[in-house]
Amino acid sequence: MGGVPQGSRDGGNPLRQLSLDQLRRRTSHKWREYPDDVLPLFVAEMDVPLAEPVTRAITEAVALGDTGYVAGGAYPRALAEFARTRWGWDGLAVDRTALMPDVMHGVVEAVRLVTGPGDAVVVNCPVYPPFYTFVAHAGRRILEAPLGADLRLDLDRLRDVFRQARVGGRAAAYLLCSPHNPTGTLHTADELAAVAELAGRYGVRVVADEIHAPVVARDARFVPYLSVPGTEDGLSLMSASKGWNLAALRGALALAGPAAAADLARVPFEVSESTSHLGVIAQTAAYRDGGRWLDALLSGLDDNRRLLAELLAEHLPAIRYRPGQATYLAWLDCRALGLGDDPAAVFLDRGRVALNPGPTFGTGGAGHVRLNLATAPEIITEAVRRMAAAVT
Image (cartoon, rainbow, N blue to C red; front, side):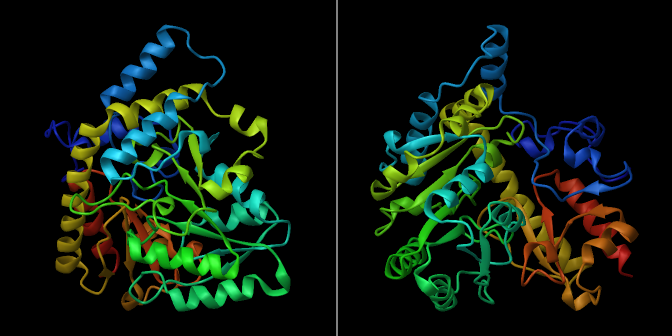
């Protein structure tokens, strides 16, 4: 296939180190969901080799037979140091953390801690589809507070939905996606402080999914929710999974503000014990020793955001794209193409490019697609060429 990477040509950029043939040997969801003639740019997996410190840590553990039950003390310490050096936050209290099998299981546990069956959980749509399915499976009901036209938090709308969520004095939670998936929006300190003020005023408990926190543009900085004023009763979920492509090496951390420590202490023993020991080893190594690899990745993603904007402007100018400051995901507004609510179906059928369908992200998703930028620039170029051909 012309125009796609044939091998490692850029030792510094992890996104350019694997050929398409190598990638197709993978057995993960991304590379097994569709036939080989489809370019998969949907699920949030990255086309990268593992960072060397992670590979070394896992290999050494396996060589030692270190495959027993989990011990998580090094993990929160590594994350605390990462937070201090990367985000300037020295307030991550190791004694207010708990191991979780992964972030979404942690989200469900956090929601269960602060709400009861039938209570409302507020989300900012369009948003990561499992927010809907996992919350529903936990027996809670979703209330949507759509993002504004600028794809940022609409605080007036959020206030109104908080009021609605608390009708009758019922408990309520706000599931904050930070950075936001699928738009790549990086919330500011002022926005997060305003969220905390509203949550405190209306008695809504905030649970922040911060899994994409390491993946920010090189000229930007992530602000942890628990680092802003008024978040003492907040809960957060973090993981190295997205930053270092560790979905198969599961392990997350729940973090609690000072007033939420008692809530976190009620996490069932079996939940933390279900976390993978090898996953914790990998996550710890990523946070502790994977900084140089992450920096190279972030530079590559900055280049890919610029490349996608240029390619769309040239070949598909009707698609609206606001490059985000975070995540490796691109939210494309395809409504002007007249492809209906689900343009992803057209791009798959006619162009053999697999993207995430916008309608699965809730209100505001119709006519949109989500594209995964964490691949070689040649693959992005070929994908846009195919998408353009699909609508001509």
